Length: 300
Image 1 (cartoon, rainbow, N blue to C red):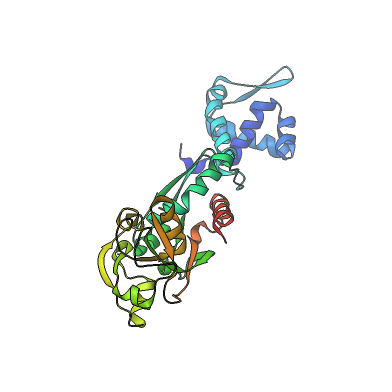
Image 2 (cartoon, rainbow, N blue to C red):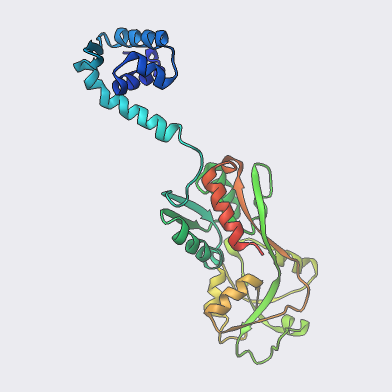
């Protein structure tokens, strides 16, 4: 049989006949007139070359052929009802889904834990897969559907086909070892210029602070350059190094290492942290829910 010859509406009638064993009751159940339901039964008989339903007493009972077809037809109808025509609403409490979120290493420490705590209480079947990748790769991952969300500073995503929502604005501060001998509550311009610096360049790219320092002709003695903010946990304590990082990152590092947070000697440019998503997920109810969770937990 050519699948193109099968009108799926006929399966609705077949399903109703199995359940109600009467053309009249079946027609009422699916909203057809009795003549239309009778015509559909006639088409089913011609299609399968079998009577399918035979009147015995007060009921139309299935023939052996109809009984053999019944499990397959019921599976098709269940799939249509439960999967294809399901309500687009997302029930977090019952959902079983894995979301892929793009965020830098520090985001995994600062952003992901409160999200996981919320999921444990409200969406126990939801899982998070966190990935750090270069910014140019982030756009491709969101476009392809390999990731649903990006959280952090992603200037490359501020373009067409991407949506964004601001979570918070932060500023740069300096961090030094708790026992640093020459730095008080604020590092001076002279101390900054004379110090050795630890610089973080995620994915090897120049960032907002580096561009600003170049514009101001401010030079640093870069003693070490690393790719991950959390590397500073091991590098700065016990040293005389200075690192200039966003305030939220400094606060995370301070929880894990013996460092002090001090004001930078200049008013540095602010950093805006957003969540980004591609237009393909803009109306996805599950991703809308996740964005709401992220916004509620991280905005300030």
